[in-house]
Length: 240
Image (cartoon, rainbow, N blue to C red; front, side):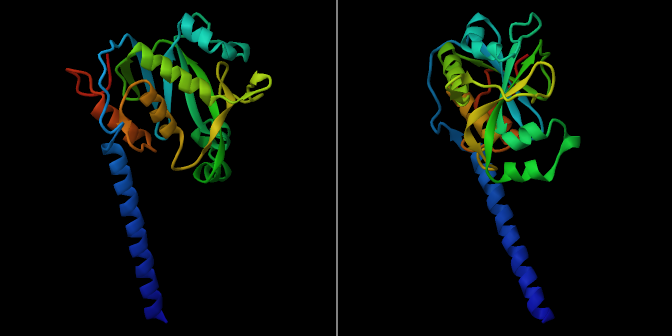
């Protein structure tokens, strides 16, 4: 009986080892294989910039606020996001798991239910926040220069992520992290394989940047961004 149990334990350990190796290989390949595979060739100047904010599990895209951006996202003003405040410099967009995003404002409020929902299949939300002046360089922020057409395409991608009902965009009531942010229902289902960082990567590709083929983690997304979008004369994707 003991010998049989030992054999079962060894089989389980070998299986776990194979699973870990496959996961590591998938993440490595997802980071190193570029998407699009053959890159882009464009002579378009890069008059616009965007920022990518990173924390240990999540990435956001910060878009500089100007008159055209305020017009594009005027529905956010109507919903109470005060993007026209004098101190506001960026609109910050993130996509994620509805249960986890709303239910975990801080790490101290982490609960099993939202984690389970995020790891399986959950509805998604768009989180919109404001940022003021951002000092660079800093480890949690990357700046990228993009062309006007790519910038517009990325804004269209972000805009399409919001669910529109008969009354237009609807803010989720009484849910926010602070005084200047809000949550909105979004298109798509969230899961561990197609999560917030794969959404960020897709938006950045619309802007004309190259990412890894599959970037479920902030670290792998940032590695691939630095690898394939390094400005001439720069050692990484961060601009001063």
